Length: 208
Ligand code: GRF
Image (cartoon, rainbow, N blue to C red; front, side, top):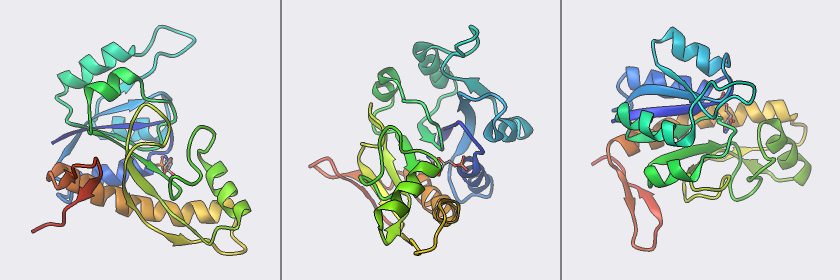
């Protein structure tokens, strides 16, 4: 399967997915990277690994970058099967959601539906979790719809929240689990082990 990864930042999830595809854990290839932040860690990594990079959306200050329609056309040219958001902070346009039904995933660093939606990104998520007094947190992998963090949930992992945790410490503990769970889910996706129940709930089948 052909994968497009979308990033805005350091791209550690992108790197773990790329590593897993290179070493055969994921039966798929990252054929293109999409970013809204030229020069971010994910962008650099892609260029160092000969992965083509697309800029989306257009930069405000110039005409550089793709429109939603151009993005869909370009992803089709790359024959992309699945889109993986990995720390991409912009909303995904309706055109793309409709062009790739049940084929776009996101990873979020909290146990959704808690601590999700607009405004919950980066360390803000972990600050809010700690302030709430929650004893557990962890990443969620979910399908993407036209809103932030509301698509069908596929997988979650839990990590403890300790009483003296700083947001940075919690972020680090959650990120470690993100790398595991995202690779597990993407490998299931590429092996067509995700099945949709009649009531619209996605389930992951284990390998036979
Ligand atoms: C992760 O915490 C992810 O859950 C969130 O953005 C962060 C991206 O981290 N959506 P990285 O760029 O993959 O290191």
